[in-house]
Amino acid sequence: MPRSSPAESLDHVRHSLAHLLAAAVLKKFPKAKLGIGPTIENGFYYDFKLPRPITPDDLKEFEKTMRELVRQKLPFSGRKLMPAEAKKIFKDQPFKLELIKDFMHPPKGVKKQPLSIYKTGDVFLDLCRGGHVKNTSEINTDSFTLEKIAGAYWRGDEKNPQLQRIYGLAFKSKKELEEYIKLQEEAKKRDHKILGPALDLFTFSDLVGAGLPLWTPKGTLVRNLLDDFVWKLRKQAGYEQVDIPHITKKDLYETSGHWGKFQDDLFKIKTREGHLFAMKPMNCPHHAQIYARRPWSYRDLPQRYANTTKVYRDEQSGELSGLSRVRAITQDDAHVFCRLSQAEGEFLKIWSIVHEFYETFGFNLRIRVSTHDPKHPEKYLGDKKKWKLAESILWKIVKDKKADVFEGVGEAAFYGPKLDFMAKDSLGREWQVATIQLDVNMPERFNLTCANEEGKPERIVMIHAAIMGSIERFLSVIIEHFAGNFPLWLAPVQMAVLPVGEKFNAYAREVSEKLSAAGLRVETSVANETLSKRIRDAELQKIPYILVVGEKEEGAGTVSVRTRLRGAVARFGEAEACLRGAVARFGEAEARRGGNDGAVKLDQFITKARREVEDKTLGYQN
Image (cartoon, rainbow, N blue to C red; front, side, top):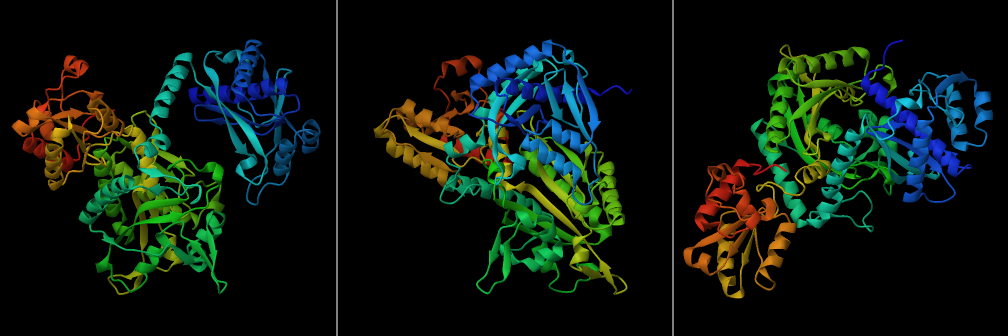
C-alpha cells in the first residue's frame, strides 16, 4: 500500500479529530443532530443542532473528552453499505438522511458514488467517504485544540435550519499549533473590520444593508489613490477609459452565458413594462458590446478598455465578511480585444503592470495557473479544443517567464483559463489579488471579429484583467498587511501639526498652510488639550509624521518630527535613507527615552516628504 504524503497524513488526523469531536458532543448531548464534519485549512469543524447554545466551558469539556478518546488508541474502520442499511443506522439523524437521499439521486452529470460509513472504536459511527488515521495513537494530544463556535445554516442556505459549528485547529506538533495561535492573535489586532472604522475609512449601516460598505472621505481618498495608480500604469500601456451602466437586460447575460451559470447570484429588477433587468455581476459583456459597435481591421487591434466600476452579487448573508466579501464590489476592470497571435504580448504587458503595482507594496507574488476541471465540463462554456488551446497559451507564457507557478485545477473562470497572482502578507497569509484571463468563448457568443489581411472576418480573443480585483477586498488585505500604517503616499492624513501651547497656534497654522501648498495632506490639532493627549490621538490614527512646534521651532523656522515608528522622535535629517523616503532611523537608546531633538527646517522636511510620496516608498515594514 502506498505511503501517505505528510499533507495527506495531517488531513487524515484532522478528519479523525472531527469524528472525535462529534463523539464528545454526543456524549454530552445524546440527542444531538449531526451535520457534516470536514477538514479545512488549519483544522476541521463539525455542525450540530443542539438543545441549547454551546458555551466556552462546553468547548473545554469536549476537548478533554477528545483527548481521553485519543489515549484509548481507538481504531478507525470503514465499509461500504446499501442505502437501506444507511437509512436504518441514521434513522434519528435527519441531516444524514438528507445526505443519503442525495447520494441515491445525484445531480445530472455527477457520477453516483457508493455509500460508506466509518467507525471509531465502539464510540462513534458516521456517514463518511474516509481519509482517517488507522488508530488514534497517531494523533498528538498536544497538537490540537477547539478554537471557536459559529452559526451556520445547513448546507449554507439561510432557508434551512441554523446549526452550531465548532471549529478545531490541528497541526503536526504543539509548536506549530502555538505558532499559529500567536499568528491569529496578531491578525485580530490587524482585523480590517475593526481597524477600518477606527481609522474612519468606511462604515456599514443596517438601513443600507449588509455587504454594502459606505466610504468616508478618508476611505474614498485611499481608494482613489489606488485607482489612480492603476490607471497611470494602464494609460502608459495604451488603455482607454470607458463607462457602462450598472443594469442591463437579461438578454445580454443570456448571450454571454452568465444568466445560465449565475442566475441565482444576480440582483434582478422588473420594469413597469414587465421587462427583466439585472444589476451587472460582471463588466465583460458590456465591454464586448462597446467593441461590437463598429467593424474593426486587424490594424486597429488590440483595443484596450479600462473601467473602474461596481458589480453586484447576491451573496448569502452568512457569507458576508467586512470588505472581504461584499455585495457591491468595485472592480478595476479591463478588457483587451485582440488577435490570438497578440494574446501572449498583451498578457506580458499586463503582467508588467501587476509586477510594478505589487512591488510598490512589498508583495512577492507567485502565480496560479487556473485550469478547468475535465471531470465537470458542465461548469464551462466551449469545447475541449478551445480549452486546450487557451490553456496551452498560458502554460507557454509562465514557462517563458520562468515564474513561480502552481496549477489550480477547477479554478478557471467558466469562459476561460486564467493566471491568478497570489500575494503573501506580513502575517504569511496568501491572498489571490490580480488576475489575467484568456477568453476564447465570449467572442464567439457575441460574434466579435476583425477583418484580417485578406479582408475576411477573423475571430478575435478577449483578455480579462484586474490589477486589484475587488478594491474592497484589496483594501482589506493591505489594511491588515500594514496594520493600518499605510505608507506616506497612501495615508489619508500624512502629517499632524501640534503646537505645544495656544501661543503657538498661529505658527502651527502657518506650517500647515505651507505643507498643504506643497500638496501634502495635513491636519492641525490646536492646543485645546494636553500635548501628550494630542500625540496619542495622532498615533491612534496611524498618522505617519507628527510635527511638534513651540517657541524654539517658531524662532528657527523648524518642526520637531516624530514618526509613528515606535512612537519615538526621529532625527529626520540624520540619515540618507530619508532621501529615499524611508522613515528616519534613530538609536535604540533615544527611542526608549523618547527625546525631543528631531528638529528640522520646514523646507527641508517638505522636500523629503514630497520625495517619499513621489517614490511611493514603504518607509518601513511591519
